[in-house]
Length: 259
Image (tube, rainbow, N blue to C red; front, side, top):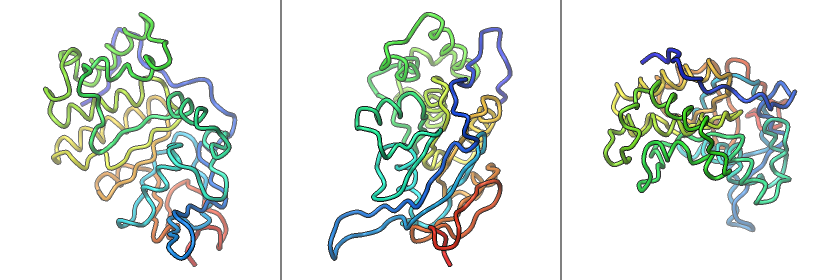
């Protein structure tokens, strides 16, 4: 599926960006769960930087730290020590209320299980970021309809999630992730619940949207096909970076990089 332009005004990337060339910057990040003898460290003094406008695959076996890293980048969790900067903001210093606003306004999420609201229509699911900010204007309603049309969902706008296929639900989730012009999209196994063909369509759309809007995508995946669509890779093992490719910059030996 191609995202060709329509006569309606397309979604555009946010112009409210930090001058920092790195959208993600982690400095000596450690994440430990629990305390005492039973404590478990999921990430070990991780230091890395991701330039803006990249598509990055997080790879590694289960338990390697991918989900923990996504949770930190998504402002869902806080590091035990170290700094997590997204768009120049050290999110480790934000209050819970500030974190919620940061997630809503500057981040987009695509989940393996879609996480659509079953009681809302397709249109209303995509509109959630603007509804929460009480900024759903007439122009933005038109923008949502335009994006749904570009994703092949023009005739599904008033349907509910349980009336859609898995691939269609994931396209709705993708529309919701980009509609408010985030700086960073975090995708957690976005093709994991889809058949091969639907998964390829989602990957095509994700890459095209990333290219068009200049957004950065960080994707946790076990799929070599999905990773192959990314320009950069970060390989994790036991909470440490054990390999990278592309433009990702990793800290010095001893700073979250396996010896």
